[in-house]
Length: 274
Image (cartoon, rainbow, N blue to C red; front, side, top):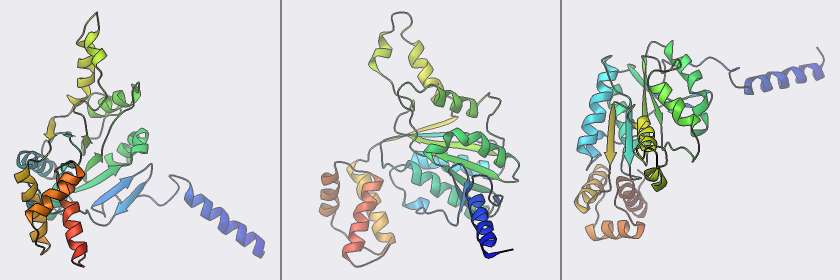
């Protein structure tokens, strides 16, 4: 084979590897987490704080961790909808709960986060996961549908319950959203002259498919300071309450996310990595 032919062969092989679905088969048993964007990418570790550091969401933490633990053990478990204000711990709680379940039951469960642009390929993902001898929590973060999008909500309802392409038995869905109903709602829906509840009930029908639905709300001052204290002590840092409150005031919110950002600022000012 000539040098030109060898070069062309290498180029063709490289291009072949870039085609979705043509790479090596995913090992669904080897990693604690994966990212799905139409193809799977393994993640070597789940980044999340210990559950004990998640303050101000005790009831939500109890519900999520119990549900994920039951699922990891092979018992009946719910699909989950975590809804509410941004930065209140919805996503981090899911990651921390899966990491905790993995610590007590290694290899029993894996987290699969779905990229927003990959929702249309969920049936492909379900097909791959259904044949794996492991349980998977498929995580869709910050889900929302555009006005007028009827296809997305209907597909999600079908995946959750009753559709021919519903999720496999070894898969549960966990969705976070800013809205309880996930889809937008408008005041005009309340003014339907024929049946004012039909549109609203249809919107809520999607949220009702989740067996576990938990609301997350903005922190009060005490909870916010408790979160800051937990993060700071875990990283060997000290702080003044006035500084923590001023930080939250400048950002217009008190939340777990704002608390972590404040502690990151503390560590950076102290010349520390966290």
